[in-house]
Length: 435
Image (cartoon, rainbow, N blue to C red; front, top):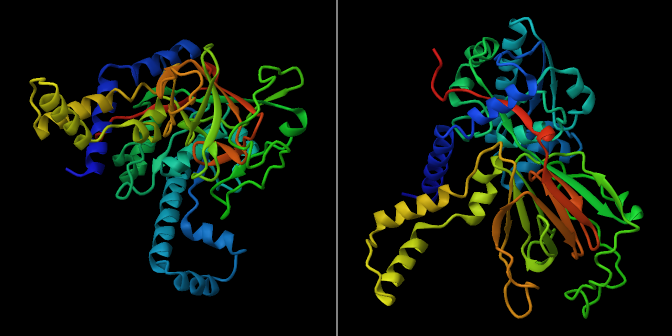
């Protein structure tokens, strides 16, 4: 079995385990009933906002200042891109979006469409429900700007033959859009809450004004301009000044306008550069760390990047089992099949319910030599109620759901936490045809 298949099977089994224990769906439904004071499974959808996926063709067109298609084709073919496949995929995407819009209009509903470039607060406030059409990336984009915990986001996977779309409705909904919309209208679903991460930034007032979002999906070059820092020299760049590090009398704060449904990543923009971060888990002591960055995730994101960072591979577990048997005389079944079973059981424990009130953090490629970390004892990964991060980086970013990035350089601090009022409302539907 390939590594990809191992991942897919482990994640699928983990999600099934969560659902069977009712931690994923029933608890989400219970939270909704508690907040709304009703058991009613009704969905107000008179005004629907479709959020469309930006196709590769649209991205290239926008990046080349909307030049003529004939000129764009020459540029892309010269570069080695498969222009025909790009156009075909673009047309399939737009046809799917039009199908969803047509079926909604046939039901007598009002429909507006928005792309990444036109999706704004005015449209969000106008609609009753946000309907992203794409994959998980489009769903994350749509969800990140919805602040109202009672406004549902319900996504369609526009290419179920190419991607899984774990945040979207089941595959049968993409193949039968009319039937899926009818099922939603008739209340054949379960309300579900997904926790999201609120990020509060603290820094000097003049620096706070420069912490503005950079859309990573609409720029070719995604590095921040160099940061002027008088303390930054070859002799001191790897030894940041921690004096007066607890003083915050002159610092200002602001809450970032984006909520993270999957994860928040913090680290240097150039991946080969070491990220110097100070971490405080819950109300514990501050710890100096060197690493390749920090990933803080929700229960929803625990099946994504968090899982990829921390999951074990079967061959690694097999080697450990053989060492225990050969070098430590531990009697055990060290077959490949048993190693797969142990691996799967370990990996499934990395995932936790989407409505969990806890975060999970992972320090990537944690450097543990000489005096680092200081003090020692910080776990490379764990769960927490809150994570506080102070940057001592020179060109770092705080990235929300891999989509929007904020400058996060020396002296800037971030508090990552979950609040019930920030949760995202969505639905869960049966993976099989409901009729």
